[in-house]
Amino acid sequence: MAELATIARPYAEALFKAQGSDLAATAVWLDELAAVAENPQLRQLADNPKVDTAQVFDVITGVVKTALPAAARNFLKLVIENGRLYALPEIASQFRSLKNAAGGSTDAVVYSAFPLDAQALAEVAATLEKRFGRKLGVKVELDPSLIGGIRAVVGDEVLDTSVKARLEQMKVALIS
Image (cartoon, rainbow, N blue to C red):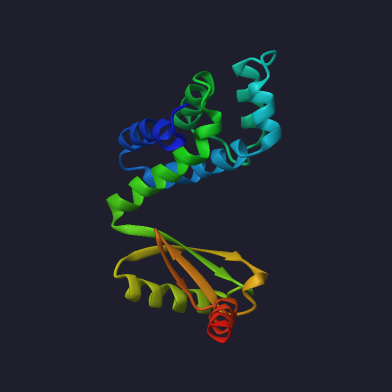
């Protein structure tokens, strides 16, 4: 079977070209559809030969919290009819990459042991933008195993200033 990224790329590129100036709104509904498509029970339903594509479409549109525009509904029908529902999260990821490249920004995930307030997040975002030299769309995820500090992932680069990383460094230094 072809790699998931290879399957998702044409869908993401076609959606990117078709949506033109409405990329932000498209990213919102695409991320929501991708989150729903990750559900293992939904995938099992979609893979069931006794369930037709219209039923799968109805289930997904019933679960989605917002009203989907016509473009979203048509795109979802296409993905379901082609049996590519499992690729929807990767399609969303590649679409975000295309959108960010067009806007000159990159997604960043900041892992923190504790919730960050708006001011702290703004300071972290400004520092990371200066460090990486580009505009970042920062998303925060909690990871209590870090103990303290943060771990930032920007593209394929990682900046780890967490207590856990420092303890690991001390452990390595003491063992060797």
